Length: 543
Image (cartoon, rainbow, N blue to C red; front, side):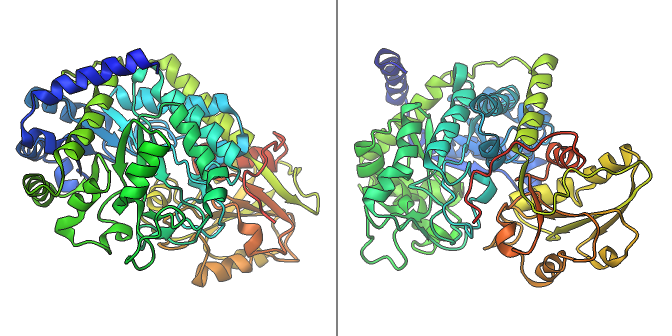
């Protein structure tokens, strides 16, 4: 955005700021998550709370398009400054908006390595989200998956090459922010993926030297800032080379560090957009500060929006901090200006800009792009016995075995519930005239000798099991048993975590899809049977 256009937005934000009360200013700093099922069924309570605390934004997830539209319309009738509806649209509008198109995970985009497809994924998220009222997404993930054991990044990352991550993240941002339909958020500053910690459980640490950080993560952050990303999310991640965090056991998270958020990101790196914290209930920040001080210390350190606030606790705490000078007027006004400038850019400073419904033609194009990503991502990482492509005649009997955790949270739960036992694979095989037996987390059937092919399908994504992306316990034993010398035409396919070769080095045939959605399952079958050639290249080192 050129300087003149940016100055115009800033003037509009400043004019709005001057007309606001102290309570209205403080409310702009708070984003409340309305995730509880009871809240979803009580929109009047949401509106009432939003009015009471002058909340600037709300977070929704797993809300239907109709529910979001109805809530947005009611908020617009009752609030003087439009409330931004935010969500996690990391790979398309789905599953955050269940009736939206869900694209493959970002690592599949990295394997396809196609900027045009990445931009289309961003555009699809923006069009489908904004059309129903979601104007702010906490995506794309700009982390670099250096550590194969990192339990948070993995398939949510574009890969382990900083140049590729920077290039594809920029493409997604362009798609999202075209026509200023949606505010994209690059996350998680200063960069996850170095250690194997989980910010949900503790403060993770980016232990790179400053010189190494600048050549890797710094390259990504500078690229997304040049792309004029509207928002950046600070993670509960320490960067000791910039702020060693004296007095903090295990490192000071960026969300509590003025050096990282204000001095480094905003001043040195030149980020002029809105800085939102990662969720403050996460132990990566909450283990350092008492609950009633979280929002205050987060804002003092430089965050402009506190994510997953508790309005009844955090609003009065912030107001006291302003009145007592703990949060200076300069810090308060800088934060509010950044929020209001983003709203002005989105056309939602005074009244919300209407967005037309997504057309059938657009939907067709987005669905085609999702399929293309899945097809182009398919990576045959091992084919030592030359099994793929398989030539199976109609009537051939095959076995599919899904290995997965039975439950999960977040992304793990989404894919676990929506795609369960990878049954699209079975449907696709049957449509081709094959006779299919299926098992879940049980390799015993594979010991029978009457199958012409055995497909072991492993579905492991971040948050399937808290703290790890490895298979442990009973599931690990089942996986280790999947290498059966007597099995005919055995193919192991990773519908998620691509590092399975490290878990089972004796596997001779390994296909990587990086995702377990229907498009990925269809791409797997087409690749197994030689209907398409796997052109994907792993975006992470597997050796």
